[in-house]
Amino acid sequence: MKFYYAPMSCAFATHVVLEDAEAKYEAIKIDLKKGDQQRPEFLKINPKGRVPALVTEKGILTENPAIMYYICQLFPEKKLAPTDPYELAKAQAFNMYLSSTVHVGHAHKHRGHRWTNDESALASLTANVKKNMTDYAEYIENNLISGPWVLGDNYSICDPYLALVTRWFRDDGVDLAPFQKIKNHNIKFHERANVKKVMELHQ
Ligand SMILES: N[C@@H](CCC(=O)N[C@@H](CS)C(=O)NCC(=O)O)C(=O)O
Picture 1 (cartoon, rainbow, N blue to C red):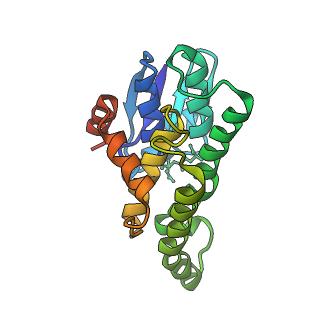
Picture 2: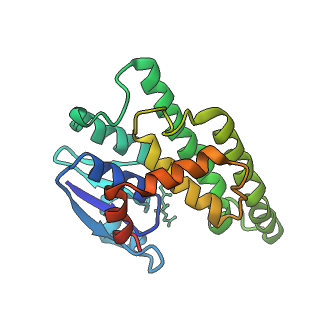
Picture 3: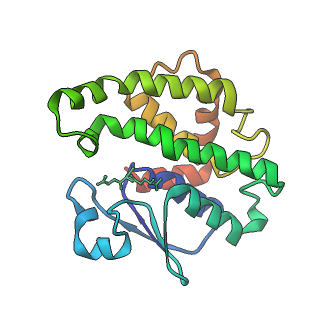
């Protein structure tokens, strides 16, 4: 498999899952600041012009939640997702909330031009990022983390994704002091050897 990623992007979460699964893959770095995602060679991989993208022998997969669960299914022995249908749906709901709501809230900070060209609307979108991200952190803290991992005692595909989003919370000025579960989760996550390895690739 070939894994296309950009350092410090949302591809970090899926990158950690590839390492957790001990998958054999080649990591291919692209530079979003240089606009590599819009170059014709990358648009052949992902016409959406986004990372991550995973080239498999069957075809190309995009979207973090889909790729992460695909990796789980390739390596069921790693137990990176629940097998009980209800618990699995809860795990997927968590990852999809991060992908469809929290990621979009964060994107309003630097990518607001996707939604509007109007300068005052753009300024308003940016100004609301800290509050929205604080609301999302509060919701996650109070409703979605069982602790110590997202799903309780078992580490899963939800954990690298939460760690990524925790970095975004910090970048977006969210005061994490009231969110003890999120803070504890982040400390525990960064103690993992796989995480240290992927962090080095994402500098
Ligand atoms: N829904 C997608 C979002 C992918 C995405 O937006 N990736 C960002 C990096 S965090 C990207 O490639 N941005 C490049 C751009 O917007 O030009 C997923 O979860 O995989």
